[in-house]
Length: 405
Image 1 (cartoon, rainbow, N blue to C red):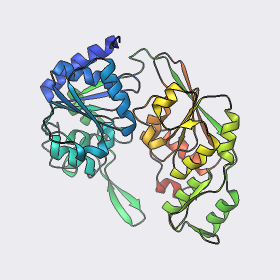
Image 2: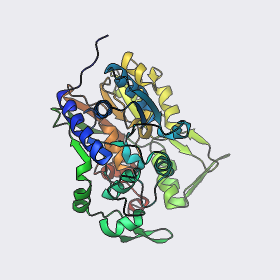
Image 3: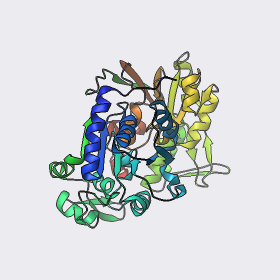
Image 4: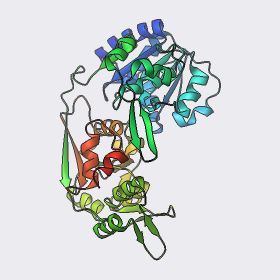
């Protein structure tokens, strides 16, 4: 079998990356999607002389990474595992650790449990960080990504709070139970001065991509209008066996978001499909097209699998058959290639600006000129308001929701 060859820019970037890795013990590949972060990282490991490499990623990306490893003919020992299974990794005798989608470690002001576990086990091992959205929501997200390594350029700060005194401008934020410190206003120029020697940036434009993402909205009357109106008025809808309760802002936001797409989770934690008209509309409107479809709530998958009986949740099967792909936005938004689809349809989507940016670009390849991405919702709905916020690389919050009601 003929081996794949790296693109010329990937070879050049790998050479630069290995020099940074040798000098700093950390290199951050801040590459746009579809530009070859994985291949560049693997080639960097080869140039580094690594014999044993650990690659931490999302579960759905594992097969793609293993395929790249095989297709390019690498021979070092590679362990690829999803972040949630880190405890299954025996020992820490790796020459390099690659952390894919590093922004997943970026929570602040406190580190996530995943970040703390990584740091406890692998902080002294040379580290390659990968992400196309290093700090989409706030530059304060940078701190805990570098915190993973003992060689962090911020290692003199014992924690985020000490770091924030220098690199952020804290403000007070009002929440339902009072006020909290908001550290999201980071000093971008100052942070960039510190991290620049560790970063390699590369865009689709740099790679010669001419692909364009066309975001298109199809307005469709919301499902469950009577239930939505009653819930807004009374904060509760009681059935014979189940109750929909929206006695807090968070609950109201969540229930309306669910109901507008045809499902609901009751106070008992049971879920139910209440209206399949939106899914059936999509099936009819896009008839004859090979679709990739993103949903948000679990019950929406059960709804979609009936509307699209010829579907799969496997990327491999999707790429080799005529089946539609149905995937949850969060778990499918990173590290997968859906370019076999004629278009991408969002049945529903979440509140995160980062996940939105990651998920709309799943069709892009260097040879594909246009990607059509469709959003289906009612004009003036909560779902539309969420879309208008997340497409600005921001999170939609309860505070923003309260301004609407």
